[in-house]
Structures are given as C-alpha cells and as structure tokens.
Image 1 (tube, rainbow over the protein chains, first blue to last red):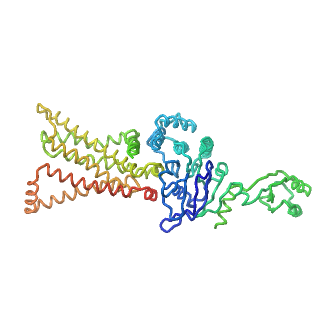
Image 2 (tube, helix red, strand yellow):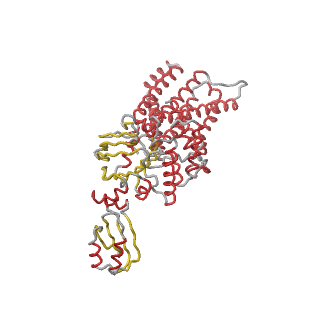
Image 3 (cartoon, helix red, strand yellow):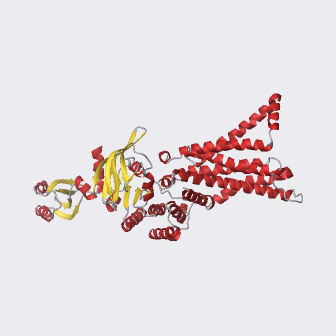
Length: 308
Length: 247
C-alpha cells in the first residue's frame, strides 16, 4: 500500500520551474526523507502534496486522494509541520493544541486526553498553560510536532523539523518524532538538510536538486552507489611497495593516501584481516584501523557535484 | 461550515481577549471612544437621544476597532508565519475568512453598542430630567444599522488591504487612510457647497425634503452595498493558492 504516489509532478512559477517532472512513491508506515539544498523544490513539493498549489503538469496521490481534485480529503487525513512552527505565540500551548483539535473535530474528551498524552511525551505538560511566546525555539518545535500528530493522521509532512535548533533540542525533536512515528505507525514525509538526521530516521530517501530528482532509494543503497565499504589504516611506513602489494589484492578497488592515513576502497563487504596482516608484514606500523562506509552526507555532496 | 466558522471564531476570541499585553492595548484604544461617550452626551444634553449626534459614535468606534483588529487577524497570520499551517489544515477557505471576519465585526459592533449604552448612562447621570432618557426609535435603528455596516465595511476593506500587505502595520495604515479619504472629501465638498449660494440652496432644499428616516435609509443602503461589494471581493481573493504564493 502506497501512502504517496507522485507521477511527473511539475510546478512552474512565473516562468521558473520549481519542480520538474518528479516521480517517486512512499510506502505506508515509512519515514521518507526528501533531501535537497535550499531552493531545490522541497517546500513546493510539500505544498503540491497538500493540495495547496495546483501542479502545472503531472499528478500526485496522497492516501489514495488526488491532490488536485480531492485536496480537502488530503488535508483532513494528514498533519503538517511546515517551514515555520505555525504556533500561535499569544496563546498557551494547551490552547494551540485545543484549537487544532477542534479544527479536526475531535470530541472534547478525546482532545483533552490526546493533548495530555502528547504534551507529556514531549515533556511539555507542566508548562501547558504558558504562553508559547515565552518558550524556547526547541519547545515550540516540539509543540508544533505534537500539533501535527494531534488528530492521529495517517501521514505527516515535516518540513525541516530540526532546522535552527541546538544539538540537544534537535535530538529531542528527533527522538520525539521517532517514538511517535513508531508507536502510531504513521507515514512521515520529512524534508531535511541534515543528513545524519535522514540517515538515522529514514527508511527511504529521495534527493532533489533544482526541481529534479537525482536519486531515490534506501540510504544504504545510496551509500553503496557512492562507494562501497572502505578501510582506513592509520600509522607509519606507507611505502610505494606497501601500496603496490595492497593494490594487487582482488578485494581492493582503490587506494589513496588521505592526510597521512591510508584509505582503501573495497569491492565488497569482506573480511579485512588479511589486508591488515599484509600491510603489517610489509613494514607498516599500524596504530588504528577503521571500517566504514560513505556517509549519506558524502553521497549527497557527490550527487550535488555530479549535477553541477 | 458553521462548526468550522465557530472554531476559527473561538481561536480569534482567545487571541483578542486572553493574550497578554492585549488588555492594556485594548484599554488604550478604548480611551478616546470612552471619553467621547461621556463628553458628547454631556455637551449635547437631552438632544443626545433625539438628534443624530450619536451617529458619530456609531460610525467612529467600529471604524477604529475593526480597522485595528481585522488587519491584525489577517495580515498578522502572515506576519507571524502561522498562515501556512492554518491553510494546511482541513479548514475551508470560507470558514477561515468568515470566522475571522465575524469575530472582528462582532467585537467592533459589540463594543460600539456598549459605548452607546455608556453614553446613555452618562446622559441620564449628567442631565437627569426625572425620568429615564432613551434613544428615539428611528435614532436607535440608525445607530444599530450604521455601526454594524461601518464595522462590516471596515472589515471588508481591512481584508482587502491585509491580503496586499506584508505587515499588520502596513495593512492598518492603508485601511485607515482609505477610510479617512471619503470623510475628507465630504468635508471639502461641504465647504465648497457652502461658498456657493446656489449650490447651498439646492442642497438645503434636497436635504430638507428628506425625513431623518429617509436619510438614514439612504446611508444604510449605500454602506450596505459597499460592504457587500467588499465582502464579495474578499471572498474571491481569499483562496489558498494565492495566499500560499504570497508568503
């Protein structure tokens, strides 16, 4: 079952193509990361999926509803935390949630129970009567996250939910999101600049640049596409002979010296004990050995470079 | 739709009355109408309930109050970045528009009626004739109708300018400026007519031929038509795609 299906979706603004014939789908219950630099078309895509804008070309279905002709149904069954928190600062946290509970026609008892549940989970319950204006940015962001999930939507759109937050607040928001998404089994469409966040949360990602999708897939697949597993050897005595010996091994794809350490790209995820032994027997004084893979950030930067 | 309008009104009411700092701001805004509500009946005496002087309060008070609240409600959502989230909810465009409009109009109109009541109490206290003074029926109708229509007209104009303004201040300034324009034109028109004996006689005979009730009906009809036209424009322009793109 697909929560989102996008086919050739395109949006032009005043002669500028913000979204250019993109195609992807998101499975139900998945946390889907939509990655891209500023101005890549991420927010426009969310606006199109929420039926706030009409596509110039192509179509999209959200929870089985056509975003152009059934936009009201889309918005009824989804939640959103957009670029700004959308929190009413002059109202208390409780009133902010109460308002949106009323918007989604939740009965009073259900509304109150859900508000208590979410604010407790976000560690905000004790300060529910405070005006939101007196809260930190991280607290407002958590409140906005609670609001997006208040009516138990089947799908939530989160536009850079941890942007501009300090490390601790960003982590708290991520933890809150992870716990809620897992417990409630909802689909999450997440845009972010933060690759570590995408790597931690997302089961599928898509990368957009200048309105075009440049990659989609599981983060591991994208990492594999940018380069396979690798081995980093720190130490002394990396002579030409050592490099020649290592290059001769079938599991070695490439070798480079990076800032005084040896970086060995492997053809497959294999046992590397033999390689280390070979280096030691050839005279290398090994201080540290690390196994690793390309990070999503490296994949992302590579994709951006390729496009340029 | 009715439930959605009531939901938006609930939020607007909370924002109007419960927010910190708003109470002192509201009291300051109310100072000059309150002063007028006591001073004008004091200087007019018992004529206050017979002549058309109370119409001044009925026109000025909703103009000031709605001219402040409507831009704050509409342009304020944009300035405070709460509009996209509201538009991403299931609320229909019309429910957002009318929820905000109705709350502002009710607030402006309600306070005006309260001010008219205060002026009546002040009149009775200051010029007690031995019986309770009350507005004559035609004047009461004129006060109710004119204050309501001024509130509605100002609200329509406020929405119109709020949709074109990036800040609350800009929307308030535009609304107030445009509303002051007809008053200035009228003032200059009267001065011009008074300088010309023939025009003055024509005006005198035309107005003299009209009863107070007829004059009120003409004013009500003109204000009503203008308010309906402005609301129609507001309904046409208040749509999600336009609002999202103007962010």
